[in-house]
Image 1 (cartoon, rainbow, N blue to C red):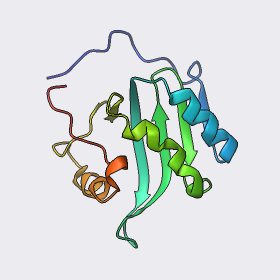
Image 2 (cartoon, helix red, strand yellow; image 1 turned 90 degrees about the vertical axis):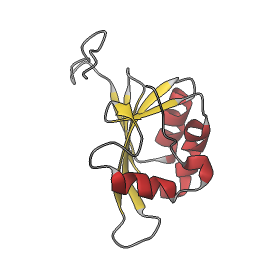
Image 3 (cartoon, one colour; image 1 turned 180 degrees about the vertical axis):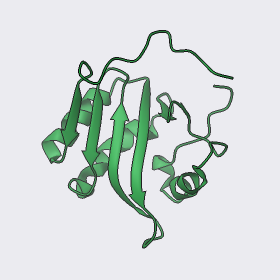
Image 4 (cartoon, rainbow, N blue to C red; image 1 turned 30 degrees about the horizontal axis):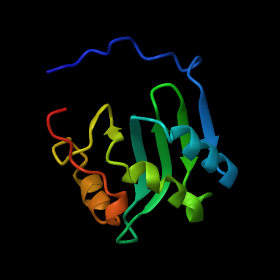
Length: 128
């Protein structure tokens, strides 16, 4: 079953995006996303050498603006995004689908997310 977007996504040239590798940039991203009702999330991480893994790059979008966060550069300040991820009213979507254990190829990601502290875990979304 395929769902159609109400409107095609904007072109890359017209979609504002922000590279975040400083505390100021991360604060600005957290503030801008504070009122989002739905965010798209993608995390590039390394789980080969650490149980909890290491987030390397975090990509977030509210549908109008995008942020590419160098999680290594702002590692000690990533907690600024905790309120966004802990807010159950904000739908977190990965690869244009709700994050859940049935996504093809994301079994490792679900296991990795489940090792995170409860406030940061992404929950299954049923019926979306």
